[in-house]
Image (cartoon, rainbow, N blue to C red):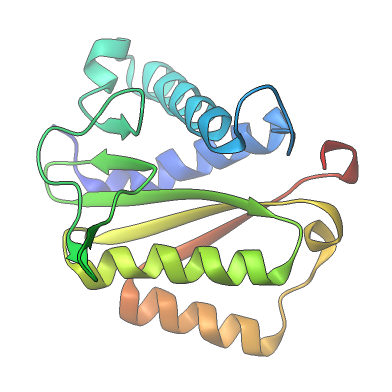
Length: 172
């Protein structure tokens, strides 16, 4: 098994590739299904290239809803409902929840951050990663000092990290 010290290196590679993929906001399938499929393919490719793993070996570290279900408890139960992240990266020393979300407005990003943070509060993950695909005007938005203060709270108190992928308007 691999430990979570590799997470930053893996994320860097995955985010660079996701930015190049330009996931359109609209398509034949729902955005969520397309985003999960893309994320899964990119992570598997990173594991193959970076660690020379087969897809079968890589599947032991990445679980994506609808593609490679996580065996066992995914997350806690809150307000009488279960929480399921879009994906889970499993290391021998940590379980990382991955949320994939998108939007053209700040309220979509705010709601995605709230949803991601609750995974930490439910207690089954050591870290939460929110990969937010920003479309339209939101793709050009520069985080304010207040935004940065809120993100610091999420990072420091909830171990929840926002990665903003800024996509050109032509993919809106």
